[in-house]
Image 1 (cartoon, rainbow, N blue to C red):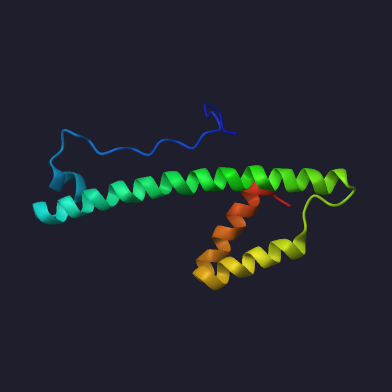
Image 2: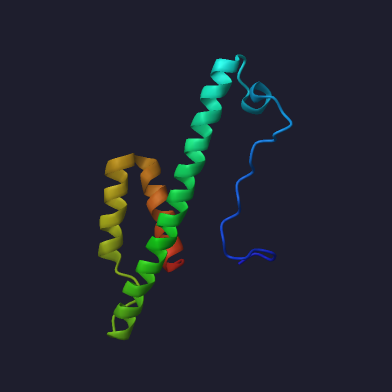
Length: 111
């Protein structure tokens, strides 16, 4: 863990209330700025849910890893990880593989 971090994900920067809606969004019309601001709020809410799900995934993976190690097995099951990589690649393309690798690393550490 880096110095000064608490283990929680950093809070994303919020919009500066002193800025006008168009300044804050980069839009050139109030209508577009309102649409962007509303969509950004939804993205922020989705990101909060994704972070929560990743944290939950990490906790479940720790239970699996502990059970595997306690039973005399290896820490990592490579065939299972290949299934996960394939599922993400099929659903999201090449970037899905990178996302799955990041999730696996968060869940079990570097191999």
